[in-house]
Image (cartoon, rainbow, N blue to C red; front, side, top):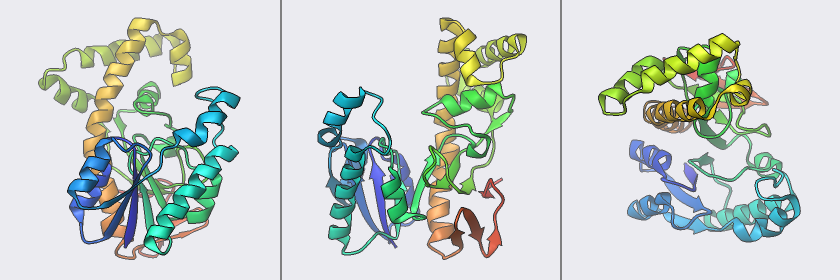
Length: 279
Protein backbone atom coordinates (compact mmCIF):
# COMPACT_ATOMS: atom_id res chain seq x y z
CA UNK A 1 0.00 0.00 0.00
CA UNK A 2 0.87 3.65 -0.31
CA UNK A 3 0.49 5.05 3.21
CA UNK A 4 0.70 8.74 4.09
CA UNK A 5 1.27 9.51 7.77
CA UNK A 6 0.38 12.98 9.04
CA UNK A 7 2.54 14.00 12.02
CA UNK A 8 2.92 17.12 14.15
CA UNK A 9 4.62 15.80 17.27
CA UNK A 10 6.76 12.90 18.42
CA UNK A 11 5.76 10.63 15.54
CA UNK A 12 5.61 7.54 17.74
CA UNK A 13 2.35 6.23 16.26
CA UNK A 14 3.86 6.56 12.79
CA UNK A 15 6.99 4.75 13.99
CA UNK A 16 4.98 1.88 15.46
CA UNK A 17 3.13 1.45 12.16
CA UNK A 18 6.41 1.29 10.25
CA UNK A 19 8.04 -1.07 12.76
CA UNK A 20 5.29 -3.63 12.21
CA UNK A 21 5.86 -3.63 8.43
CA UNK A 22 8.33 -1.36 6.64
CA UNK A 23 7.70 -2.80 3.18
CA UNK A 24 4.83 -0.48 2.24
CA UNK A 25 5.43 2.81 0.44
CA UNK A 26 5.42 5.48 3.15
CA UNK A 27 5.20 9.22 2.75
CA UNK A 28 5.16 11.61 5.71
CA UNK A 29 3.35 14.95 5.79
CA UNK A 30 3.91 17.52 8.51
CA UNK A 31 2.87 21.06 9.32
CA UNK A 32 5.76 21.31 11.79
CA UNK A 33 9.16 20.69 10.14
CA UNK A 34 11.04 20.54 13.46
CA UNK A 35 8.85 17.89 15.10
CA UNK A 36 10.10 14.50 16.24
CA UNK A 37 8.10 12.72 13.56
CA UNK A 38 10.24 14.35 10.87
CA UNK A 39 13.41 13.13 12.57
CA UNK A 40 12.02 9.58 12.59
CA UNK A 41 10.95 9.85 8.95
CA UNK A 42 14.45 10.82 7.88
CA UNK A 43 15.92 7.96 9.90
CA UNK A 44 13.52 5.68 8.02
CA UNK A 45 14.49 7.23 4.65
CA UNK A 46 10.89 8.24 4.10
CA UNK A 47 10.25 11.36 2.07
CA UNK A 48 8.71 14.26 4.01
CA UNK A 49 6.35 16.89 2.63
CA UNK A 50 6.19 20.07 4.71
CA UNK A 51 3.52 22.75 4.59
CA UNK A 52 2.96 25.04 7.55
CA UNK A 53 -0.62 25.86 8.45
CA UNK A 54 0.36 29.24 9.91
CA UNK A 55 0.29 31.38 6.72
CA UNK A 56 -3.08 29.91 5.78
CA UNK A 57 -4.70 30.52 9.16
CA UNK A 58 -3.07 33.86 9.99
CA UNK A 59 -5.93 35.97 8.67
CA UNK A 60 -8.54 33.53 9.95
CA UNK A 61 -7.16 33.91 13.48
CA UNK A 62 -7.47 37.68 13.18
CA UNK A 63 -11.02 37.30 11.92
CA UNK A 64 -12.30 34.75 14.44
CA UNK A 65 -9.81 35.00 17.29
CA UNK A 66 -7.08 32.56 18.31
CA UNK A 67 -8.54 29.18 19.17
CA UNK A 68 -11.87 29.98 17.52
CA UNK A 69 -11.12 29.36 13.85
CA UNK A 70 -14.05 27.28 12.50
CA UNK A 71 -13.27 23.75 11.38
CA UNK A 72 -14.67 24.30 7.88
CA UNK A 73 -13.60 27.87 7.25
CA UNK A 74 -12.32 28.75 3.78
CA UNK A 75 -8.73 29.12 5.00
CA UNK A 76 -8.61 25.57 6.38
CA UNK A 77 -10.11 24.20 3.18
CA UNK A 78 -7.54 26.05 1.06
CA UNK A 79 -4.76 24.64 3.25
CA UNK A 80 -5.99 21.08 2.83
CA UNK A 81 -6.45 21.51 -0.90
CA UNK A 82 -2.80 22.46 -1.13
CA UNK A 83 -1.83 19.47 1.02
CA UNK A 84 -3.77 17.13 -1.24
CA UNK A 85 -2.18 18.64 -4.34
CA UNK A 86 1.33 18.20 -2.94
CA UNK A 87 0.71 14.61 -1.86
CA UNK A 88 -1.05 13.48 -5.02
CA UNK A 89 1.51 15.21 -7.25
CA UNK A 90 4.29 13.40 -5.42
CA UNK A 91 2.56 10.02 -5.56
CA UNK A 92 1.00 10.39 -8.98
CA UNK A 93 -2.26 9.16 -7.45
CA UNK A 94 -4.32 9.31 -4.29
CA UNK A 95 -2.89 7.45 -1.28
CA UNK A 96 -4.33 4.09 -0.33
CA UNK A 97 -4.42 5.10 3.32
CA UNK A 98 -3.91 8.24 5.41
CA UNK A 99 -2.91 7.69 9.03
CA UNK A 100 -3.33 10.69 11.31
CA UNK A 101 -0.46 9.99 13.68
CA UNK A 102 -0.52 12.89 16.11
CA UNK A 103 -1.57 15.56 13.57
CA UNK A 104 -2.64 18.71 15.40
CA UNK A 105 -4.95 20.27 12.81
CA UNK A 106 -8.60 19.57 12.16
CA UNK A 107 -9.66 17.84 8.98
CA UNK A 108 -12.34 19.77 7.12
CA UNK A 109 -15.33 18.17 5.43
CA UNK A 110 -13.52 18.75 2.13
CA UNK A 111 -10.65 16.46 3.11
CA UNK A 112 -12.98 13.84 4.59
CA UNK A 113 -15.14 13.76 1.48
CA UNK A 114 -12.12 13.45 -0.79
CA UNK A 115 -10.59 10.45 0.97
CA UNK A 116 -13.36 8.76 2.98
CA UNK A 117 -13.06 6.00 4.20
CA UNK A 118 -9.27 6.01 3.88
CA UNK A 119 -8.37 8.36 6.76
CA UNK A 120 -7.66 6.70 10.12
CA UNK A 121 -7.30 8.39 13.48
CA UNK A 122 -6.64 7.13 17.00
CA UNK A 123 -8.18 8.53 20.16
CA UNK A 124 -7.25 7.91 23.83
CA UNK A 125 -10.79 7.07 24.89
CA UNK A 126 -13.93 5.13 24.05
CA UNK A 127 -15.58 7.22 21.37
CA UNK A 128 -18.71 5.05 21.48
CA UNK A 129 -19.31 6.53 24.95
CA UNK A 130 -18.57 10.06 23.70
CA UNK A 131 -15.33 10.21 25.68
CA UNK A 132 -13.83 12.77 23.35
CA UNK A 133 -11.68 15.86 23.83
CA UNK A 134 -8.01 16.68 23.86
CA UNK A 135 -5.22 14.81 25.59
CA UNK A 136 -6.21 13.39 29.02
CA UNK A 137 -9.83 14.60 29.11
CA UNK A 138 -11.32 11.28 27.85
CA UNK A 139 -9.78 9.52 30.85
CA UNK A 140 -11.36 12.08 33.17
CA UNK A 141 -14.73 11.47 31.54
CA UNK A 142 -14.37 7.73 32.09
CA UNK A 143 -13.45 8.15 35.76
CA UNK A 144 -16.39 10.47 36.44
CA UNK A 145 -18.75 8.10 34.66
CA UNK A 146 -17.66 5.38 37.08
CA UNK A 147 -15.73 3.25 34.59
CA UNK A 148 -13.11 0.91 36.00
CA UNK A 149 -11.12 0.70 32.75
CA UNK A 150 -10.34 2.81 29.68
CA UNK A 151 -9.72 1.98 26.02
CA UNK A 152 -8.13 3.52 22.93
CA UNK A 153 -10.25 3.72 19.79
CA UNK A 154 -9.08 3.63 16.18
CA UNK A 155 -11.73 4.95 13.83
CA UNK A 156 -12.37 5.92 10.24
CA UNK A 157 -12.43 9.72 10.26
CA UNK A 158 -15.69 11.23 9.08
CA UNK A 159 -17.31 14.65 9.40
CA UNK A 160 -17.91 14.32 13.13
CA UNK A 161 -15.49 15.68 15.74
CA UNK A 162 -13.01 13.11 17.15
CA UNK A 163 -15.27 10.29 15.99
CA UNK A 164 -16.22 8.09 13.08
CA UNK A 165 -17.01 4.44 12.37
CA UNK A 166 -14.94 2.43 14.84
CA UNK A 167 -12.48 -0.04 13.36
CA UNK A 168 -10.59 -1.31 16.43
CA UNK A 169 -10.60 -0.79 20.18
CA UNK A 170 -7.76 -1.71 22.50
CA UNK A 171 -7.83 -4.12 25.40
CA UNK A 172 -9.31 -2.47 28.51
CA UNK A 173 -6.73 -0.78 30.69
CA UNK A 174 -7.61 -1.19 34.37
CA UNK A 175 -7.41 2.30 35.88
CA UNK A 176 -6.26 1.33 39.38
CA UNK A 177 -3.79 -1.21 38.05
CA UNK A 178 -2.27 1.36 35.69
CA UNK A 179 -1.93 3.91 38.49
CA UNK A 180 -0.37 1.28 40.74
CA UNK A 181 2.18 0.58 38.02
CA UNK A 182 2.98 4.30 37.74
CA UNK A 183 3.37 4.60 41.51
CA UNK A 184 5.80 1.68 41.51
CA UNK A 185 7.94 3.73 39.13
CA UNK A 186 8.03 6.70 41.47
CA UNK A 187 4.95 8.73 40.59
CA UNK A 188 3.47 8.67 44.09
CA UNK A 189 0.06 9.86 45.21
CA UNK A 190 -1.93 8.88 42.14
CA UNK A 191 -4.13 6.27 43.83
CA UNK A 192 -4.95 8.56 46.74
CA UNK A 193 -5.60 11.32 44.20
CA UNK A 194 -8.04 9.08 42.35
CA UNK A 195 -9.79 8.36 45.63
CA UNK A 196 -10.10 12.09 46.36
CA UNK A 197 -11.54 12.71 42.90
CA UNK A 198 -14.08 9.91 43.02
CA UNK A 199 -15.07 10.74 46.59
CA UNK A 200 -15.69 14.36 45.64
CA UNK A 201 -17.66 13.33 42.54
CA UNK A 202 -19.88 10.94 44.49
CA UNK A 203 -20.54 13.49 47.24
CA UNK A 204 -21.67 16.06 44.66
CA UNK A 205 -23.34 13.55 42.30
CA UNK A 206 -20.95 14.65 39.56
CA UNK A 207 -20.89 12.38 36.53
CA UNK A 208 -19.58 14.63 33.74
CA UNK A 209 -16.33 16.47 33.16
CA UNK A 210 -18.21 19.73 32.62
CA UNK A 211 -19.79 19.50 36.08
CA UNK A 212 -16.43 18.60 37.61
CA UNK A 213 -14.78 21.68 36.07
CA UNK A 214 -17.51 23.91 37.47
CA UNK A 215 -17.37 22.57 41.03
CA UNK A 216 -13.83 21.33 41.66
CA UNK A 217 -11.26 23.65 43.14
CA UNK A 218 -7.79 24.23 41.75
CA UNK A 219 -6.09 21.57 43.84
CA UNK A 220 -8.50 18.82 42.78
CA UNK A 221 -8.41 19.96 39.14
CA UNK A 222 -4.62 19.75 39.16
CA UNK A 223 -4.83 16.26 40.64
CA UNK A 224 -7.32 15.20 37.96
CA UNK A 225 -4.91 16.35 35.24
CA UNK A 226 -2.01 14.56 36.91
CA UNK A 227 -3.90 11.28 37.31
CA UNK A 228 -5.34 11.33 33.80
CA UNK A 229 -2.10 12.42 32.14
CA UNK A 230 -0.48 9.38 33.69
CA UNK A 231 -3.28 7.15 32.43
CA UNK A 232 -3.02 8.64 28.96
CA UNK A 233 0.69 7.86 28.85
CA UNK A 234 0.10 4.21 29.74
CA UNK A 235 -2.83 3.93 27.34
CA UNK A 236 -0.72 5.28 24.50
CA UNK A 237 1.74 2.43 24.92
CA UNK A 238 -0.73 -0.37 25.68
CA UNK A 239 -3.54 0.96 23.50
CA UNK A 240 -2.60 3.27 20.61
CA UNK A 241 0.68 1.53 19.80
CA UNK A 242 -1.09 -1.81 19.62
CA UNK A 243 -4.24 -1.04 17.68
CA UNK A 244 -2.81 1.26 15.00
CA UNK A 245 -0.27 -1.24 13.58
CA UNK A 246 -2.79 -4.06 13.99
CA UNK A 247 -5.45 -2.23 12.01
CA UNK A 248 -3.10 -1.16 9.22
CA UNK A 249 -1.18 -4.40 8.75
CA UNK A 250 -3.29 -7.23 10.14
CA UNK A 251 -6.62 -5.98 8.85
CA UNK A 252 -6.50 -3.35 6.09
CA UNK A 253 -3.42 -4.44 4.15
CA UNK A 254 -4.73 -8.00 4.10
CA UNK A 255 -7.99 -6.90 2.53
CA UNK A 256 -10.05 -7.86 5.56
CA UNK A 257 -11.82 -4.48 5.97
CA UNK A 258 -14.72 -2.98 4.04
CA UNK A 259 -16.70 0.16 4.84
CA UNK A 260 -20.16 0.80 3.46
CA UNK A 261 -21.52 4.17 4.51
CA UNK A 262 -20.87 4.21 8.25
CA UNK A 263 -20.83 0.43 8.67
CA UNK A 264 -17.53 -1.44 9.12
CA UNK A 265 -17.13 -5.05 7.98
CA UNK A 266 -14.21 -7.31 8.89
CA UNK A 267 -13.89 -10.63 7.10
CA UNK A 268 -17.35 -9.98 5.69
CA UNK A 269 -18.94 -9.67 9.14
CA UNK A 270 -20.68 -6.48 10.20
CA UNK A 271 -18.95 -5.03 13.24
CA UNK A 272 -20.78 -3.75 16.33
CA UNK A 273 -20.52 -0.02 17.14
CA UNK A 274 -17.29 -0.60 19.09
CA UNK A 275 -15.62 -2.37 16.14
CA UNK A 276 -13.07 -5.14 16.56
CA UNK A 277 -11.93 -5.36 20.17
CA UNK A 278 -8.57 -6.84 20.98
CA UNK A 279 -9.85 -7.99 24.35
